[in-house]
Image (cartoon, rainbow over all chains, first blue to last red; front, side, top):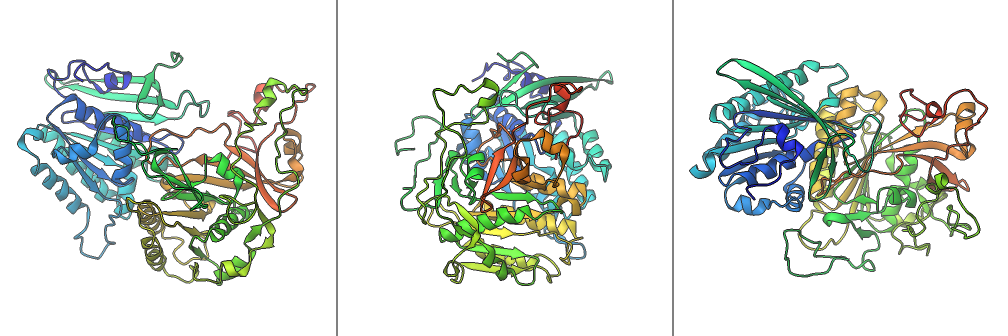
Length: 260
Length: 361
């Protein structure tokens, strides 16, 4: 369990082979996963979820679900070897079901707005056992549904993300969010996507292969890791490209052309 | 078939199983899902069984042709044949009149298989074998009658009235509604009857919403309102034993709104008209004269799993066999004229080339 083989995604995200002694690489960082209609990036969220639970005994996950109900994630993660139900019973997994959340339209009192969602996150964190509070990961699936829930108010959504980012970066927690970049690529409101990308520390872009869909290779990933060494003020950007194939109980990552 | 046994690993098997004789309209799917038929056996085959209960199917219309209506008719009719309650919403003034155009099961077709059988004497060249498919895939039992999972529906034979004069069908007109709140409430009421619990599924329902953002509707410019309607509909449907089919014309929406709807769909299809007498297409495809349109499968529902469904082909031709039965066929590229000047790589339409061909959509 401790010395799992690291795959390309783990390396790109900054994981180390000896997790118990190294600091959690996603501490205080914001991971943004981008995908499109042809190729879903949800598997990256599943991967990070699994890593959060298996690499540290004292970690917790707060999951804001806008896209799927808990049964879906339960089944998917169980096949990956992670039991969400027992993690929830142990107080390490909080599932906030936001499928039916709809903020009231303008003019009406915002008693159900995104501010209450943020308060729910804060409350969930405060209810955590002090032991599990060291490494918390907040996962948002996904931002485009959050926009619809907020009636298209991108300012509210950006404010909400800024609040979450401040909360997680100041406390050394991780923030992971999924968004669909092809919604914004037509140039209507590119600023929204650019702002979130700017805020992100690690950008994971999932695209289909340029040659189309294939059974052996489900797509390509580009991981952009903005590493900052704050002491010297030097920031370096690491970019990695590789391909992936998604299976029921595993995700395979490999360099292009190296799949046997 | 999954059998009941104690769990020994972290993988959970589908413990409860349905006897297909009790529920002819339902079929077990992978990962604890259940399928209902789309009413078109070819589409069921393409999608791996049918539409999953709890999923949202979106069909992108072509403003130039009403092919999405063919899909809707078959979907609605199949549900009524299986006594599955139906909620139908459309922007016309009298949606109930549409029920008179629903197809009825036809008499069994004379030549049922449109795939030639494998004969030992006939040696098929390797590159054409893929068009024949696997002979064992035959969901249609061809018995006729109401005990089949998917019936051969004859579009020229209207469905008997007793199927939809009962309380099984609820029709809603969305033409004069100022917003979608009324429809949302009707859908919520309908879905509440089929909420899913841990036990076996007693009945399934179907919701069909036709052209929900057509310009006749008063709310058609309220894009965020429409998006939140679809989102809440999807959320409600996920926890119920209902399949929701929604058709919409993407050309009448802004690109980002259309993309958001595409992302929300669990299963995403699009239909497109093909022009008559298109000489270029006639040269490229065999059987062009019989085609009425094209069907493209963009996304197949992945409930309870992260593994994507990669199909061998995503574009199919829509044909009306004997002008009655809706079939989808793989596109067969006509033999390339060797005397032509262009290279084979550029003229291939089934592969993705940089040049946008008439079939890329």
